[in-house]
Image (cartoon, rainbow, N blue to C red; front, side, top):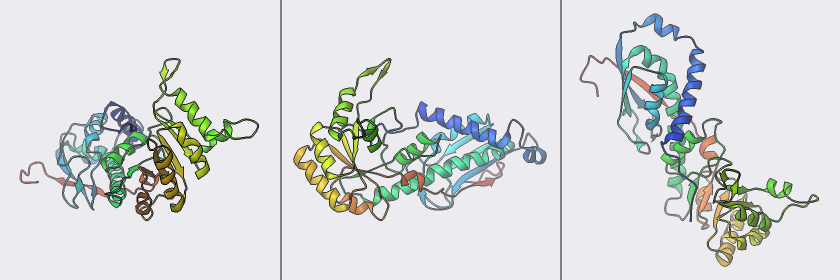
Length: 312
């Protein structure tokens, strides 16, 4: 079964991160300067700091550190001690920065804001992934992301061991109840089977210079709708807000009618519900909570004198 593309530290992510950093610079400096730092620190003073987690978690975002430094045009060198996706140990540094102290102080908050957010998302995702380890299900994110942070938060999800759902409206068909309602005639919703067939016919087709995506997914809110749509052969059927009993019935129905279709559960997916959902035999469990309920991981700058060659 094909899947949506995984977000990696590629050119698309770099572009988004650079845009976020430029916005952060505008917020902090507004075309002016860091008056406190310029007042207190001579422009030729060098120093260093280590980025250190204050609690347990999962590392995510170190790959973007060079892009942040570059956007600040900062005279800094970075060294990382972990790879994204590896566990954090409280008090054990994950990266070291050396260079101009003015640049370190001016960029400090932006660096910590970005990394604290991404580590926080990855940490929460890992809890969901660990909870259903050994089952047939995988954990997926959604488009319920912070505006402007879509790729970065999805990258953090991948660092946490989760899987990425579609990035936007452009890379997959996802037919929802609103599409059925508004795509019908005379106030009568379009049947789920008709909608699925229509999207399948569009799959890979051309609209002007654009090629339609290949993934076709449709949401159903009842077992009757599921029975209607399974024979058409979408890639995924999203069963939304089903009870556990109905999810089990949906899996049994899918296994009888069309085993090529994967089932995705959404709605009321939390840490205290995901285990029982995974036991039903579905392949996919998606939750907006992975991003909109994640809290920041506490990271800090631990400063050291670069003249001291014994720091670790």
